[in-house]
Image 1 (tube, helix red, strand yellow):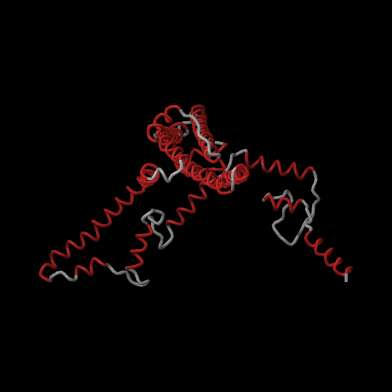
Image 2: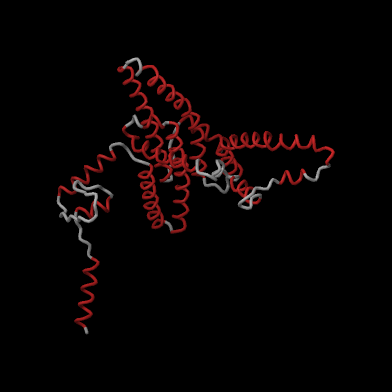
Length: 332
């Protein structure tokens, strides 16, 4: 009996052993091997050698020499937060470490969303800069997915707004799946018949012109003011419930947007000058100079935003003379 149990245990242990070869290592790291085939029938088992690690480093260099993508930034941020949570849990306790890490996550999220907003403004310039080439590729995929989602039948443009749930609830209440009921027309039926010639004109004016125009204006204004409304509600009105780290970085980002706005306009003008004047007229030396200026502008701004994101994730602050003076007056 003991021999049979030992034999079963030996077979179980052997079944858990994974044969580590080049193909297994490449699959785990998500790297396409040099001799990869399009069919899964042929399985090659190449032993791991020093050339394997040389090839892995070469593939990583080929990818990361064009900078980090959004997925890479998210993975690095998650790794920093996990390491920081472990360190703070050992230094204090799990609850304190979790709360401090959560504050860093909130501040880092603000910088990350600002990172993505800049990608929208610098969409055409990102392809010119070697450090942001992967960012441009990832943002193109994200932008294509968002456009596809907005163009999907039945999807509303205000679905991502904070009042989108109320609008969807009203639409669902006035819709049985086949027909849509207009509550305003139901109320209009109770009006006297003698004034129908006037009330019908008012009804069509309200439903076809007034309400759509007002809602389009309201939706555009809320899109522009939603960030400031959230800031006012969380940072100014309910600041005792908002951690100081989040308030500090959020206020800094609002001030930074005013500093970045002229550079965004300069970038648009430089791209127009490059594509419409320099290149069509074969001014290649000037075009190269303008391209280098665009690359420097985008790279410097993204390096600064990356440093700000790193400080936020680590729960740190940094000194920026002019913005810090204004910020101290706002935060008190």
